[in-house]
Structures are given as C-alpha cells and as structure tokens.
Image (cartoon, rainbow, N blue to C red):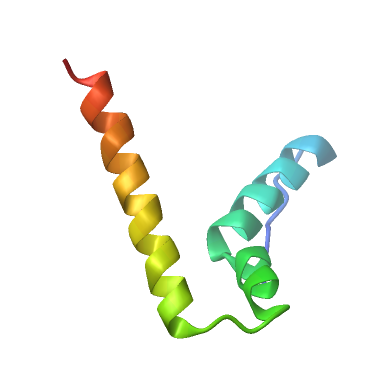
Length: 64
C-alpha cells in the first residue's frame, strides 16, 4: 500500500504527481501486465537478451 503524506498548503496536483511517481517505481503495473498471459521462461530470457543487445547498440553508436 502506497502512503503519500500531503503537506500543509500543498496542491493536490503535486501530491498526485508524487503518488504517480511512487506507484511507477513499485512496478505494480508492469507486473500486472506480465501476469495477463503466460510466457515461457525461454521466451522471456530471449526477449531480455534482445533488449540488452539493442541497448548496447544504442550506446555504442552514441559514444564515438
């Protein structure tokens, strides 16, 4: 359960923004999407490797 303490004279928008940031850091939504359908562990590992290779290529082209 996420608890946000609203400070005196703090706008609702700022408190909501802090809540959203805290909620996103917990990874609840990401986990929920992952649980909507079953994916074999081998497929999950393959996708993670593909993402890692893609990220490495991005960083390799930026630093020249």
